[in-house]
Image 1 (spheres, one colour):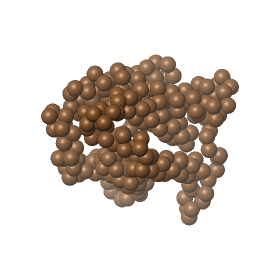
Image 2: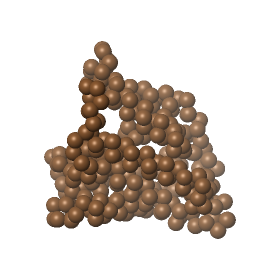
Image 3: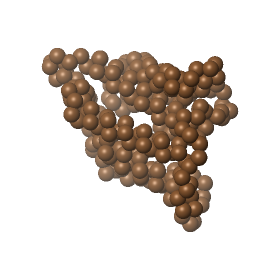
Image 4: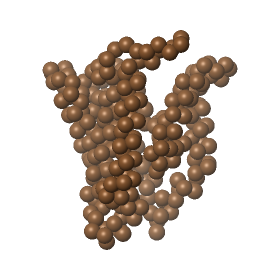
Length: 251
């Protein structure tokens, strides 16, 4: 959400699209580093659940600062994709939606390749599994953590920039996109890239098809209700796996 506003502000002062987007992505990486440094690192001695709660606190603070600077009125974001779309039956798919879909599929495939086959990916996975063992192998766990948070912040920033380009620029709309994304991760598995793509497709189908169903589908908030049920089911199925991190952290 913040990088999308950064791109918006840069465009207002005449910065071209490509440099503005690059600077926005960089700001996302910097924000990811800051969140890890201020909110997550002090809680590393606690459980991973405590660290997650710390990121929720960061969300509230960042949202408050954003509203203070840019306000709550939705703005028209910078156009990243061409206008128009493709007609499919009685529906239309905008070029921006296709561009966002293709971009995220490419990034997911690239991340999967890096994490699965590169030395850097192996180091990241090993550090996430056991920081002490990674340090004994000559890896600096803190540097790896910094890199991962910066990569995550940069990619989240890119997602926010592209999403704002096909919807609108609003602090509450963009920040709340973290909730369906988290549901997608729960459905697909927190450690699986293909599962995350499948989970994202499930969330997208819920938003697309539930409103077209009779009865409950016509009620306001029906897609969110269905997603909540899916999240509860995913947590029930993976309950031991989700709580295992806290058990490992306590040892």
